[in-house]
Amino acid sequence: FVFVGGKAESAPPQMATDDALLARLARLFDENDGGVSDELLQHEFGKEYGKLADVLNTMLEQRRVTILRAHDDTLVYKLVSAEKASKLQGLTREQELIYQEIKKAGNKGIWTRKITTETNVQQQVLTKTLKLLEQRQLIKSVKSVTSRRKKLYMLFEEVPATEITGGAWYSEGEFDHEFVSSMSQFVYTYIKQGESASLQDIAKAVRETGFSKVDLSTDDVQQIVESLIFDGRVERVQNPILTQMGLDNGPLYRSKPKITTPQFVTENPCGICPVANQCCEGGVISPATCVYMNHWLELDSLDF
Image (cartoon, one colour):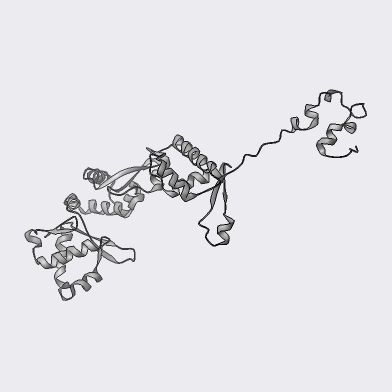
């Protein structure tokens, strides 16, 4: 049997030790995409567990299986596709070491200086290895929005983390001001049109209208809402009725009324008084006898 996409097919001579054994092993890999532990193998094969050593060793040599550390710190066997196994064939010990270091970095990537520190390989070897692994499409280089000059390396199939790409608000590594501005206006208009809206309502409106050509998550939409709150255009409120009933599903958002700045010069009587230039203390026209000031301050009289 050979393993293609997790399925067992006709076996080459070096693996044709026991078809039934291989079929059961293939089924285990199919059912456990995260990997198969040694404990599971012992439980599944019982007395036949000893026969697996040669099979697994052959598969490890052919790069059809790799050994990983699971979340609970146990070691597991994970099936490798035939295509990827062929790409891994012929790697030297140093090249394998570099590949494994990049693999450990996950979707956050690793830069060359750290690879050198962790593997102790010479710069010339590292440069050639990175080029080879990229040519075989085993790894890829990406640039971080926080450090455009620094190249990060990760496995070819990895999707870079948001902190690397900048998320939905970045395009080709550059912050997309126009997109953020238009999305902010759309969200603000939607909130303003109703009395209030939940985050779920806003995110649903963004998806259903197709306003954004980029697939935005609820967290992405929340970032826009938070920026509107910071700008003083939107405020966060709670629904007191739902809160009292224990049905509160989170805050609601509503547009914040604009606060008009008082025009002190034109709104007080002196600013618009036609005889202000004749007004003086002790004169016929004076602050003490001003009827307009009385009315403005809602006082019966002034005592200066």
